[in-house]
Length: 88
Image: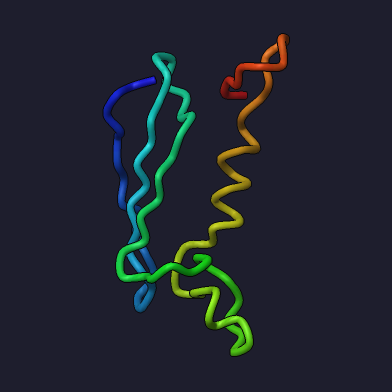
């Protein structure tokens, strides 16, 4: 795994939080670790529903953390030994 991350700041919608995704990749280019920084957002679940009862816990103006998590893990596969992950 690379000791330094590559970072990207995707475009955001007007009025939404900007964010940066830092990825650590294997020698073959597979991102095996990502660190997401949502700028201007407190300690909330990013991209949660815009419901008053949940406003203490979620921030709908951030990127959708559930979709990002699924996209990251869905492309990883276990090796034949069942211990190492590789890009699929």
